[in-house]
Image 1 (tube, rainbow, N blue to C red):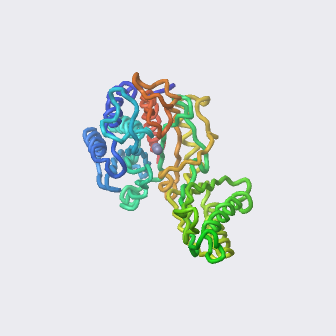
Image 2 (image 1 turned 135 degrees about the vertical axis):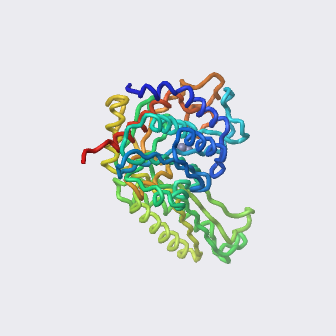
Image 3 (image 1 turned 90 degrees about the vertical axis):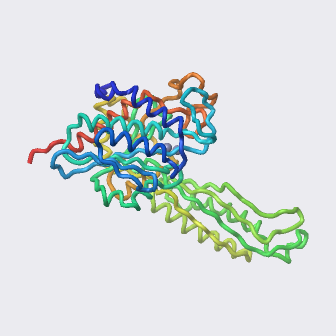
Length: 399
Ligand SMILES: [Zn+2]
Ligand SMILES: [Zn+2]
């Protein structure tokens, strides 16, 4: 493993920062203390700081030379509404809040890189450090972009990194094309006419229509979608009625749709509306379909992904870089940045939990689990990756 010596030497300081953030988790758009800490450190290292993008987002800008190229490096800062089960010293001090997705580690790794780059960085151009709020369901990346992130701080490419418990400690995983799915919610409201349960002919039964619709929707996945395209449609709620002898006058069902392309998503939404309308009409009911697209699919561009893989191989060796990592049906709001800029979102193996300090919870070290903890061994690896990525992207070029 080829870590930058100065980055490795600073690991205790960066670990202290990581554990401080872990002990003080803040939910989406409430990352005030975390943003203060990030801004203070960046300023302390002589990096230009801009605040208030996406409410609590922080941007650091570091320029060298006359180079016109710019790279964006992004970390997320928010925690989750989970009661932590770990009892070790750096456990959450905030009731019902926890860094169970490792964003404490992501923030610390990028700070570690910023410290090195400010003090020793050799590059020609601009590095934009992006510390975003609200990755967990709040679309903080989009909020920063709406506040002019890329207009004020233009970059040629943008990169993101997430710790990944399914990969061995310190191994990288990435792939060209889709790596995470789009996340979408739908709700279908069915209106009929209520009646006595013993006299259904007097009503228009919305429960029966709801069940037919629920069943029909799965045909989109098997009959309309291309077999080689991946998609999930899960109905997770069906609600209707209050009494066994009453046919209610309304019912609703809701669920989630995940896809790796917008085309497949368009097809599923269109077909869902068609099936819901036609099925309800067949039973003399009416429907209202609400379909909300939350996060788009996270799609890595080829050139930047190959470049990132090269940098990773130099640090951890080719045997520890999986360039065909299995994509996940989970979603990630870095996807919004990749809609505007080429770039690469990658995973860094967090291991299975052997790293956890004494007093960790009984559960597995999985993302969003109350016994999870970020693996501090990754700090110098992630920081080295960020540094090398930026330095190589902005390497001095002979005119
Ligand atoms: Zn998460
Ligand atoms: Zn996360």
